Length: 135
Image (cartoon, rainbow, N blue to C red; front, side, top):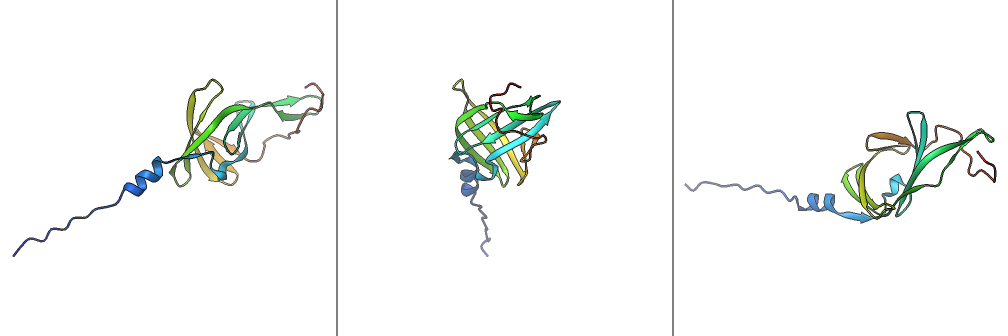
């Protein structure tokens, strides 16, 4: 009686190609401003469609509120989906070098960037602009 040989194969090409594909821009679910505190300083991070920016939140003694300093960040953004809620983002910084970092989407109001939790709601009261007043 001839031996019965069973060969099982799995198609991993779809999995490999999906995780290695780079997409232009930033994922929609993380776009917008995110805030976090590190030590005693407050920061913000904003994801736009094709770029990102971040900086300190500065305090105005006159208004007794914080405001966003002009942001700097990356342009020509691309992202790679690593898993359901984990992305690798890559962009060109102001010096022309490409840098990358990981963003984990936790919920509508929380993400993690390189292990630091950021939230949609600012931990401090903000004003939109100084309106000609010095901080």
